[in-house]
Length: 265
Image (cartoon, rainbow, N blue to C red):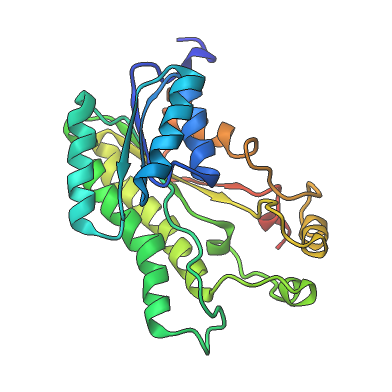
C-alpha cells in the first residue's frame, strides 16, 4: 500500500458522536472525504439529519444519523447495536460529544449537580461509548478509537488571561474530566490493543470562535504559532491520521493539536 493510499477509508464505517456541528462536524467531514461511511449522533434528530444530508451531497458516502445522549447508558447500548447492524462493521469511533456545561464556573460557587454533570458529559459518556462500540471492534479484531480530550487536561491554565479580557472561564471539572479521558485512553489502549483495537486521543487547544479580540490576542501571544486554532482546517489531518492505516503502529498516544500552547507551559 502506498503512503497516500494508507490514509483512505473506503468501505469503512466511522462513528462520530456529536458529529453534527463544531469540531464534530469537521471530524466527520474529514473521514467522509477519505471515503468512510458515517454514523453521526446528536441529541436533536433534526440537527443530525441536516448534517447527514450535507455529508452525502459533498462526499457521496452513506450516512446513518441517530439521536444519542451518550450519558444515558441504555441509549448507548441501543445506538451501538444499531450502528453495528447497519453495515455489519464499525471501524472507527471518535468520542467527540461533550464540552463545557453551563452555569456558574467558579469552583466555590458551582452547584454540586453541575460538577457531576460535567464529569458525566466529558468522561463517563465517552467511557460508555468505548465500552459498547469497542465491543463490536474487539469482536472483529480491528478498529481505531479516538477520544477527544483537551489541553485543559494537560496543564493548569493561566486564569488571569480570562480575567483580564472578561471572558468566561471553563469550570475546573472540565479539566478534571479531560485529564481522565487522557488517562482512560492510555489504559484502554493497553487493554484493547492486544485485541486488535488501537486507542488514541487528540487534545485540541483553543480555537477561535468569536471570542473578544483581547482574549484572541492574549491567547495567540501565549502560543508559539501566534494564533488560535481554525475550525474547518486544523483538526482534520490529525483525525484522518489516527483513524486510518497511516497510524497502524500508533496506539496509547495523546496528540496535542494546539499550535504549541502546552509546550510553552
